Length: 161
Image 1: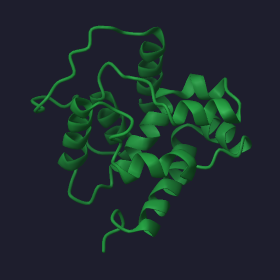
Image 2: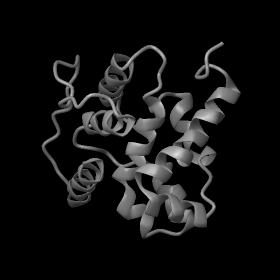
Image 3: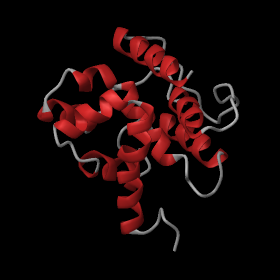
Image 4: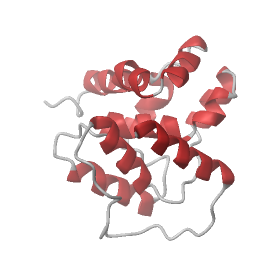
């Protein structure tokens, strides 16, 4: 049985999101969530069990899954996608208390282009630099851009450089 399919494996995968991955990628966010005692199991198991399908639309999930499976059959990109998600809502989390953090993490905001998460996850994992995925079966064609999403994307990319 592989790590992803077992219950214990999912828990280990979710804990990996915090330490060492988030701790290394964004120490300030890691320390904030740790100081509030926001446990990764409270939101991460939900994300991982259904491979992010509760957080995103079907079309966006297909794009995410394209990127995850394109990185290999072992699903080792999954915890990096979770860290990229945390970094995307970084400003909101840093300004929130325990309840605010859990509320945001259990109700993830819509994104203009979820392929950004795959791009950031690949950078965090140290994979060879690749452009955003192209040629995916379905493309998100959302024109609306929110200020938070713009700032979050710029912040994520600046942390990955």
